[in-house]
Image (cartoon, rainbow, N blue to C red):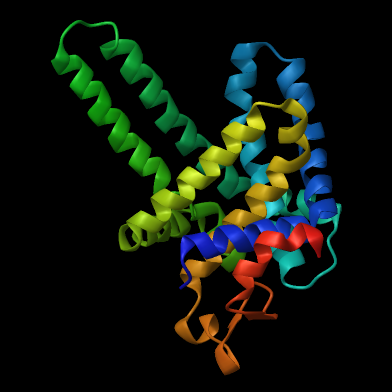
Amino acid sequence: MRKLSEIVIQSGKRIYQDIISVALFSIMGALVLVPFVFFLPVGISLFVLPFVIVPLCAGALHATHRMMKGERPKVSALFAGAWKFILPSFVIAFATSIFILIIVSTWWYYGGKPGMLYFALAVFQTYFVAMVLVSQLYALPLIVQQGLGVFTAMGRSVKLFLAHPGYTVGAFVQLLSVTVLLGLTVIGFAALYLGMYAIYSNLVTANLLAKPEEDEGENGKTEDYAGLPHRAGERLDAMSFPGQ
């Protein structure tokens, strides 16, 4: 298993190399979201969006998974994946919505009460629910990459989190940081986020699932996601890939 810093650099390199595909996947996904964001009432939009965004994420994971395995990138794979994994995506979207609702209701209820006890209860419950959310970081990629059932994938995601808590929290923070940064600009979010999320999440999950013999190739070489030879020192060269 590689360090998270290596996966972040590898993700950046793959995103740069496949920037056209990343942009196309992201833009097509963003176009699907437009009616729900701009034309529906806010209350209805907030309720419906998770059940649209999560299938799109599954579709992006499916499309980039195939692309990174060496297949030709196709926008049609985005929608095919979204449809193929729509039921498990709905389950994950529902569970995520419940957890977020718990956090919001916690601060709505305890936040308005005076005293440190209520504040401590709100912080503790928020921390607990947040850890549950973090533990599901791998659920959707596991469904796409290994074809697991949704509850099996959620359970295995928890096990991976417990086995690698530092790696998982770090990966989640990296993803959250990118989400916030791209979310500051509507165009940047629409043109890049979905494809970047898919490549990064696929690599982060595949790294945990890789067997030791798959991490190290012959003659000190490591294997990347697509099984192509990749020198261990190339991660340092990747910092200058815009000039290649």
